[in-house]
Image (tube, rainbow, N blue to C red):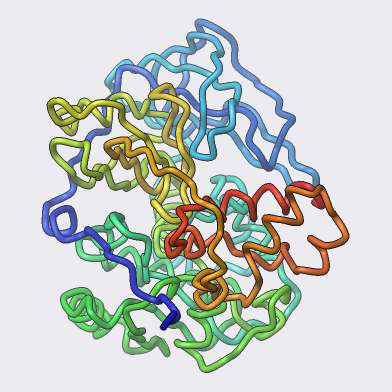
Length: 432
């Protein structure tokens, strides 16, 4: 009998127990000037210029937002190059050669807690905008836009579920820097006027719950709850997270703010603390290097703009006789295959996974229904695939392809090894 699949093997045990390796002095960083959200940009520095860590280099321009481009090391501008990002998009990047001095820009100064406590919403939003804070769970959406909502926010939800297999960088961040998480939540509640804060983790991560409960005692003056959710996939999907944590069921297509909820990833929360407390942009990224083709899986803290080729070297390279290797940036369920090692770490890079290449021959659909039973948004992946192959835009719309959250479960459970999630993405692009 076909049943709904809600569990996936996580492969986190090794990396989550190891301390995070600190690699913050690469010879070069490559900072993306454009992005998939912002195609235009201005660059205010030229080859040979000296720049400082945290200095604004220019500005990205999206359809409805602007975003500062920030130097993540101090050193000399060496021109521009083309690199891939974590979505396999080829972007223009400015290259900085490290002088290994970590000279901070004059704007990077600590801000006393007494000053932060008196800040108004507009002041906090302006700092978050200036420091280029974005959603670090993978969305990359500018945080200042989310904070600028006119809706009455009652709950701030910090998503620390991290349900993607192989990934454990958020786990290590919480374990190593719980204070940053609570201060980031405090500042977010202050900016939004929310009276209730929630940090959501999986129930099985008992040691994290203990860390958070212990840290919570220092913030008893705030209405903060540590909420645990069941071990299922995709528990980190915001609709599922808000339902499990708050008992609020969102309709697909509606914004969380309409329900009085503002949700952010736990890494974003920590970056908000850095921005408010230290006036520091996102210059570093915690990420996981893992997979069966990597010799030494681990979590690494790196400068934004570091080449993934260096991450592979830091992890002792590939296992011997591995044959062809498939590189995935992001989780195995929702990530993107990298064309090659010539990709860079961006603020939204959660992981680099290297797998031994396995040739899965795609078979015809046997109509088993596994993909339909397991889909968390109740769409019909195979029918959507067939509509895409027919180039039938009307059918794609009627089949609600835009409701797909690209969780990867349909591909994961397919007995015929059809890459259904890829067809969902193609279908969305066809009508998007």
